[in-house]
Image 1: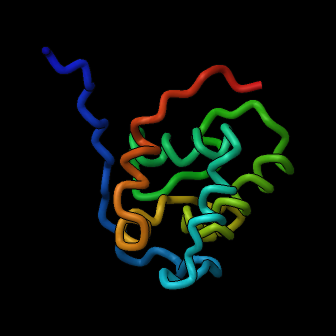
Image 2: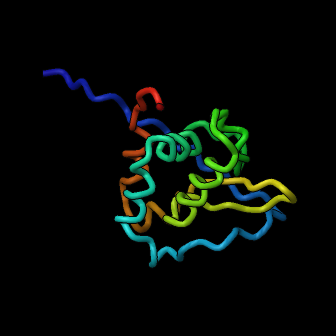
Amino acid sequence: MASTARPLPVIKVLPEPPGAPAPLAEPAVADLRLESVFGALSDPLRLLIVRKLLLDREEFDHPCGWFGLDRPKSSLTHHFRALRDAGLIRQRQYGLERRSEVRIDDLNARFPGLLDLVAAWESGPLA
């Protein structure tokens, strides 16, 4: 029988640029909790944000405007904060702009295979 499995999407890993600002406060790798990560990823918009950062990144980190999400800024701030508090993303402050990246190495060390599942997820329409 022929396999119908599709190959996994390729997660883009880019090096940290020299002189990048220090990250905002985030949980240590040992403090990452699976239930917190799953809780943050249970929202389809947050899952989409993480997936886009994994697969479509063009730079080391990206501002919230790069995602092209039609949501109020206060709503996006809430979603990015939930992702950072759960340990999924790392954010850095560049002047007035916060830029985000997925904590790929930390998450792969703590929860092997999790990011491959996120990368393979296909979204339906967002409400």
